[in-house]
Length: 255
Image (cartoon, rainbow, N blue to C red; front, side, top):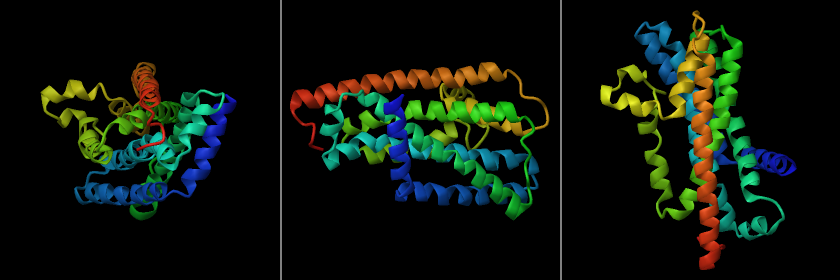
C-alpha cells in the first residue's frame, strides 16, 4: 500500500503541471457547451444527462490513453526506468498507483460539465439517486485505471502509438454509447458495446440522474468491475512481458 500511495501522490504532483491535464480541464466544458447547445436547440431537455455524462467519460478515457498510457514510455525516454526497476518494489504496484491518480483527476470533469450546464443553460441537474451515482463513478474510475494498464506496456511495443491513441477516441465513444445510445447503433454492433465497460457506466450514470430508480444496480456495477479486472490482468501480463523483452535485448533505456 505504501508503494501505491507513493506513486499516487507523485503522479498528482506531476499531472497538475502537465499540459495534457490542462487540455482535459479545458475541453470537458467545451464539449458540454456543444452537447447542451444541441439539446437546447432541438428542445430536448431529456438529453441533458447525456451532455453532462459524456464529457466526463470522454475525459476519463482521454486521460487513460494519452497520459496513463505513456507513463512507462516517458520513464524510459527520460532514462529513469532502470532506477524504477532496480528498487525493491513491484513496478506494477507503482504503475497502478500513478494511473489511479490520473483517473481521479478525470472525475473533476463531471463537476465542470455540471457547472456549465447550470450556469450557461440553467439546467441544474439533480443527482436523484446519489448512492448508485457515486458508486458508479468510483467503479468507473477503477475500471479506467485498470484498462489503462494495458496501454502503458502496449505503446512501448508499438512504433506508432500516437496514431493508435488517436484512433481509439471517437470510434470508441460511438461504440461504447458515450455519445449516442447503444440502441441507435446497428443491431450487429450492439453486442460489442456490452464488452466495453463504459457502456455500462454511461447507462447507470444517466439512470442515476433520472427520476425512476435505476434497475439492476449491483449487476451493472459488477459488470464494470469484471471488465476492468480482465483488462488489469491483461495489462499486468503485457507489462511483465515487456520488461522481460527489454531486459533480454538490453534495450531498457532505448526508445
